[in-house]
Length: 150
Image (cartoon, rainbow, N blue to C red; front, side, top):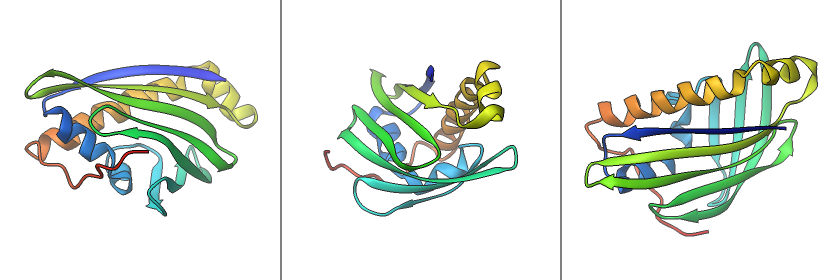
């Protein structure tokens, strides 16, 4: 099992960063390898990914969600096994630190080798950089937001 911790500062208020992160169906716009996400209920999402030619489908459940603070999840079906939390830290009125912590359990020999070479950590770094670009290029306007608590 691999543990990843990455963070990035984004030039938007904390509520904007949080609101955008709750729009799971937009993740393919900044997460490499994510083909689609369907939000099936307030707490259940269905993911389709394709990384290095390997296509996976899995369901993830939101286990905790506190507006402007955190979103935690774990996979509940499929071959992909992971759990994580993203937290949002107000640095000032227009800057937020987004911190992502994940545990990933690689499946099969190819993913195990990739994990040992640090591929998942590099992918998370790239995804956070693309999230920063995505939200900042929108002029700090999120595509929506879900303010419920889990």
